[in-house]
Length: 113
Image (cartoon, rainbow, N blue to C red):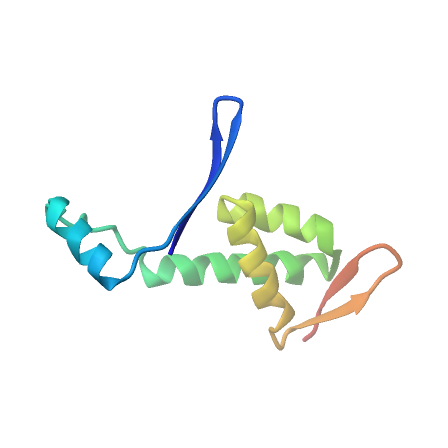
């Protein structure tokens, strides 16, 4: 089953196609599939990730304690995006050197020796 939803101009489109195995086989005969050369994506060096992690730890260590939103903003700037910053924040939450407590407005991250 294939479902297509969206708009064509001002018209809403909600289309469902149900095909059995024979229909798919017949459709495959009419569609020419050309292999696409795979493009190698560069793999970041492992030490680059470790350097980013060490810098994230250093942020909390130097601050002693820091509120979650402020830390998140710093991590997003450090990592180059909000999603990467969130991954670092989650990793910090589970780190043994970091203790998180619930503050009045936001979580507070504390460095533990």
